[in-house]
Image 1 (cartoon, rainbow, N blue to C red):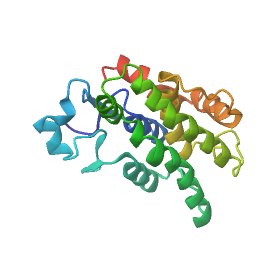
Image 2 (tube, helix red, strand yellow; image 1 turned 90 degrees about the horizontal axis):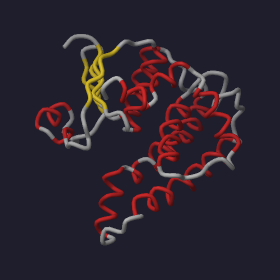
Image 3 (cartoon, rainbow, N blue to C red; image 1 turned 180 degrees about the horizontal axis):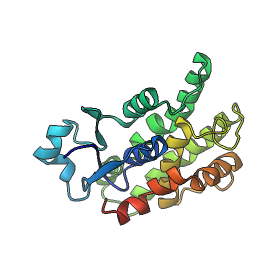
Image 4 (cartoon, rainbow, N blue to C red; image 1 turned 90 degrees about the vertical axis):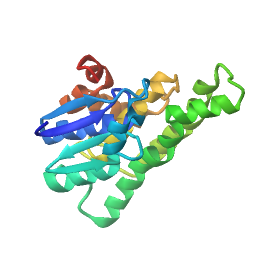
Length: 214
């Protein structure tokens, strides 16, 4: 299979990030769905692509890359996406903002983590939703507070989409899915509206990925 190939799953937050970035870069790609519900990520075929058994996997420029944040760095550096500030101090602050969601909230809100917690709790029916809300709500509240250190114009850290926006939007999708309310966070709501109106974000939405066969 030639060209750029993205192995993803429509509801995967990490895959969602890459769909946004690929759209921002104007890179045409072939999406190959890896159905997490059916366990396709644990198949020998996919484990050969990524021994961690995770999505996304991106094949681009003769490389096979894993880990969404590392891939975002690669795309930023090779396609000049401007996802980070030029100043080293500001870059660190933007990364901290983005990582507050992608590194601290997202991993514990992975569905397989929540399912394991449910099993350990004796299978409580409301456990997954309660678990998700427990981590998502304070995570977004912290993100809102951190946003106060940036000039929104109208995106998280400026007038063009950056790393923080790419990491935030998939988490907001999850927040809505698990009914973790964030309507009381005006900065986040303003960023969400700006991103939702941007074609690169709209085309990357999970509903679009699902409609395309993801």
